[in-house]
Image (cartoon, rainbow, N blue to C red; front, side, top):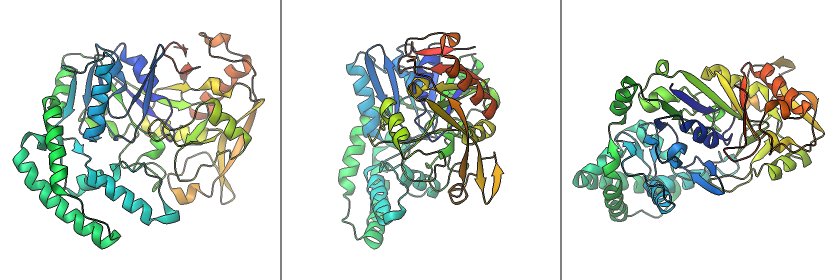
Length: 425
């Protein structure tokens, strides 16, 4: 079976844990979108792995890992990830492939990201300043793009970088009065990166299609969340790629019809990082309780996440556009101790009630959440392993979420470890 795992909220849903669990029965795990702005956490026993570019299945030593063309790669972050795993006894030699068509994030992309964000003042988007947007912009612009395959011809790459850096310096000086960047320094770093990463570089699309023909089980791993999708998210407060399951075919070269099951991951509540409208946000004691109990601080940046009640309008939208078959609900244990829970079942916009999510930041900013209230529970859930052992109110909460979003919740997370997962099907 081929599966695709994707977040259905604004990211940070717990995809890393879900992918890690499913990777046990997968031959290949594929990362198909985003960049080092993603942070996937996997906990194995007492060991914690924070992954940014490598597929979450990489911590399983028998799983083959692929980074495809839809990903923008920061070589520094990728090499650090490879070396960190090797130092912990999990080498990737012989089981990692990187697409020759994946674009490369270089230092001038990070500089451009910072300069552009600073220039926006109060209108900042909330980027992680990791060069993701500028790299994708160069990809679309084509003329100044660098891809992993370019590392194979260092002489040609040097000439390309000279042209690109000259252009970037003119741009930075004119728009931001910024100091110039040094092309030679960037090229020297690229030579070092090429020596380390070129052995992994290949045509991953060919590899994946051959794997499908051989009957291999492939697991596709999304990054960020569906509400951050460039085309279908809360634009402009989105990421720079198609982070919903709609990005999987373009980001990997494998058609959606070759995927047997699309699995959506959600938290039992909602979080968001950075700017943008958030109808169910709780800027109060409830929001802080969720933040502290759920450790809602970014894997990549460490910054506190905005927290609120479960938004069924937003998640049902992700279910619809992603053709989601089943749901993995994470962090149900975080809600223990709250006497009352709320589910956002609809919005009021311009005096009208709607249950369809408006993927437009200006319109969403006008939305007022309409809640359904349910009783909470006091019991801790972290030691439970069967759905029927959950408190009755917790079971009712899960079932009510299912009704609102139109998809079955087939697994429930009650803690960060692999073992702290309850499977209903």
